[in-house]
Image (cartoon, rainbow, N blue to C red):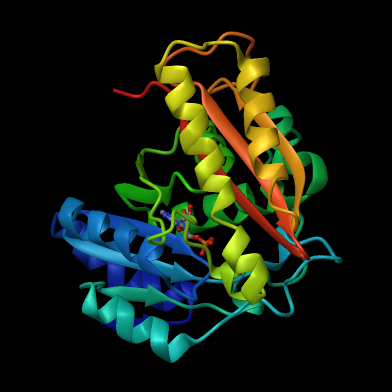
Amino acid sequence: MEIIRTVKNLRKELTPLREFGKTISLVPTMGYFHEGHLSLMDIARKSSDIVVVSLFVNPIQFSPNEDLERYPHDFERDEQLAEERGVDIIFYPDVKEMYPEPFYTYVSTEELSRVLCGASRPIHFRGVTTIVAKLFNIVQPDIAVFGQKDAQQAIIIKQMVKDLNFPIKIIIAPIIREKDGLAMSSRNKYLSTEERKQAPTICKALTRAHEEVRLGNKNAKEIEDLIREIISRACLAQIEYVEIVDDSTLDKVEQIKPGTIVTVAVFFGKTRLIDNVILLKE
Ligand code: AMP
């Protein structure tokens, strides 16, 4: 496995491979790997000849009041885990390499980036789409793998690829969870012992709601109320939103149909957790 820190060297490495007809997949990450990240690498490994993982904590997707400075990192551990999963290249640029000054150009998916998480994180998705578009141009992968854990991000990336004609197949990988149901996230590390104990309530509420929908209740308002009620039983939980939305427009729905997504953001102390479930999926 190679660690490459500059755009120039990455291009130098990938150009001949592409010319030899090798297929390339890209897994964009911010590091501090857990099984969720590693599952994306496994999918990439199975789907292409060359697996590139990017590791970059992207400053432009964090607001000044967010956790950029304390975002967890452990490059040596990440390097070892990626190597074990058969990754070929880790692209590990620094901020100057990705945003040499001056930098003026942003990619924005407009309305899609203003709802749900975008309502409280107004610059977040513009930062995500900008860095992902840059990575797509730098790596020129055939395939890129993202996680369903970040449902809104997945929908936004698919829309960006369509709107801007990127010739890239997007694979969305299922959510990997801890044994007690908590969706894996680098930010789970911030939870106190008591918060960590209560956090699985989010997954329990989503599972219970999914059951209710399977049993025939298609009324989005009732399902939303049920989820709020279950999550509120955890005394440390502060709900930011519970929304039941269309899986491509992110518009709120009244009647649940196959593919409708329930998506939630909940604070435990200062830690903001997100989770979601796709309803009535075959
Ligand atoms: P991050 O490093 O948090 O930016 O995540 C990098 C990629 O891993 C994104 O596409 C995430 O959606 C995905 N990911 C994060 N957590 C999980 C998880 N628990 N299961 C599956 N994919 C995940």
